[in-house]
Length: 153
Image 1: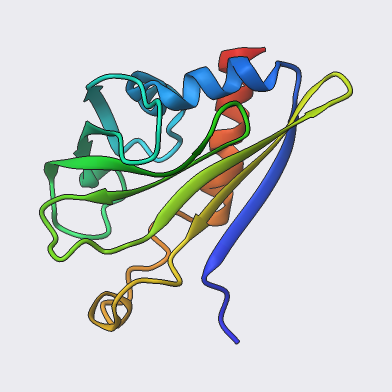
Image 2 (image 1 turned 180 degrees about the vertical axis):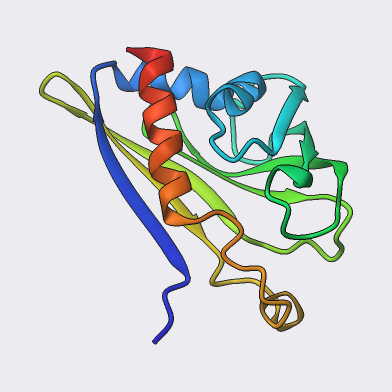
């Protein structure tokens, strides 16, 4: 069976509240991105499932698919204050691909156990057949957790 989800964890010496605030902020997504694709963002911080903001992207950072510079709308799909945030994106590629990114935060001794995940199990066959998934490797999730720690500790 093929894995269609990555999940990585890291202990971070910061409160779930502090980490969650950064994850809700569009600029926070840019600040912790390890792929180099996220260039800037605009919009209000997420406060609930259904909230949206725009991220300006540059696919040349991955050099895997000729999209160049483009915008995506981040759509929050799950939101539990200081505990869980998940999103999908909508952009040039339609219908939306339906891959999911998210973070679960659990208070722990000395801070927070942060779990980052990337799930592409719900994508349509035409996207699966394109051979570009996963877009972000598991190592990219780990790197982003390291950058997240650096930003909040």
